[in-house]
Amino acid sequence: MDKTLVVTNDFPPRPGGIQAFLHNMALRLDPSGIVVYASTWKRGQEGAEATARFDAEQPFPVVRDRTTMLLPTPRVTRRAADLLREHGCTSVWFGAAAPLGLMAPALRRAGARRLVGTTHGHEAGWAQLPASRQLLRRIGEGTDTLTYLGEYTRSRIASALTDEAAARMVQLPPGVDEKTFHPGSGGDEVRARLGLADRPVVVCVSRLVPRKGQDTLILAMPRILAAVPDAVLLIVGGGPYEDDLRKLAAETGVAGAVRFTGAVPWEELPAHYGAGDVFAMPCRTRRGGLDVEGLGIVYLEASATGLPVVAGDSGGAPDAVLEGETGYVVKGGSPAQAADRIVTLLRDPELRARMGARGRQWVEEKWRWDLLAERLKELL
Ligand SMILES: Nc1nc2c(ncn2[C@@H]2O[C@H](COP(=O)(O)OP(=O)(O)O[C@H]3O[C@H](CO)[C@@H](O)[C@H](O)[C@@H]3O)[C@@H](O)[C@H]2O)c(=O)[nH]1
Image 1 (cartoon, rainbow, N blue to C red):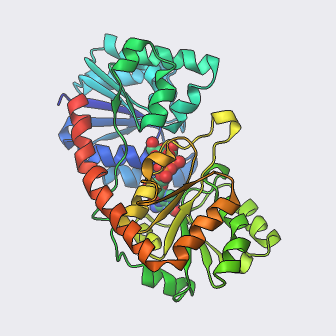
Image 2: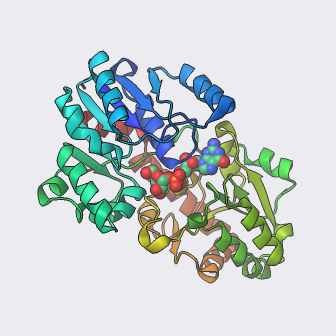
């Protein structure tokens, strides 16, 4: 592998799936073989300090741009080209192909020999509109390889590319750390802390945004409670939709059966999955296809923990479930469908155990970071 400049707007400590994807992959590359050029997390002292603390712990150098949103402006392109030369990098990995991949021709002129852009759900959204389709096409022509998460995102993105660029696409999905997420990951302690004892728990772990469908779960609760009266919905994660979700729980009359933990530290995440009997996130596509799920690492983290999953049918989310084997896919935005599948699972411990065990096995076979990082190394 040549020395690689990783150019990314999305990198921890900012939370989220793309950030986790990039960080996990970066940690599996030779630390002396990469340099990360990323945005700063948040404005102000607090953001700068959290960013500096995080960067100091990394085994590879992280160069932060002063901006909180890294875009392919002339200034950022010049800086990336300078970093490429200064560190002797010969390959470039764009953490999210759009829009930063627009810098590809300039970085090739600056000496890059291999340019790889990773696509996520958001590039599939770009493929929906005429102006952004044109930009995706340019990104496809400027890079050597665009990676994709699964069949859904591949087909959407490929439709915006030249046939030749589409043929160069390679699958690179995110993985799961199967040693961090495993059955028996300390859920009892979380249950005790939240006063859940042995109540049946439906857990959802995600950022709180409308697409993820925590609202659908709240609306499903009356139907779930009618069948399983002591069930609890445990909503793990933080985000801008929290106030609306709390209001919705009160209006629906289920506030007593819904617990919000807010965002939890990374070390506590496995135990929060472990506190659930069923994992559910019935995500839905919004804004005419622009706001769409790319895959959904959370389903895989839940499977690794040994939980059955109930997923929504948005974008590539069904790629993260083996229908009827590791869980079920329901229509996003349908409280009735979500409730029916959740009730089936809550009532049947054997089915839960069987699906959980199959999910764990599937993650070990197909979704381990170590396996997937090998694929990235070959591309770079
Ligand atoms: N520590 C912590 N982590 C959290 C919390 N809430 C969510 N996460 C973590 O944030 C990640 C969420 O990832 P995704 O489910 O993949 O969702 P996303 O942020 O919308 O990511 C987008 O890009 C991914 C990678 O391409 C796609 O898989 C996904 O579908 C989507 O398009 C998971 O690793 C999850 O554990 C929290 O409160 N605390």
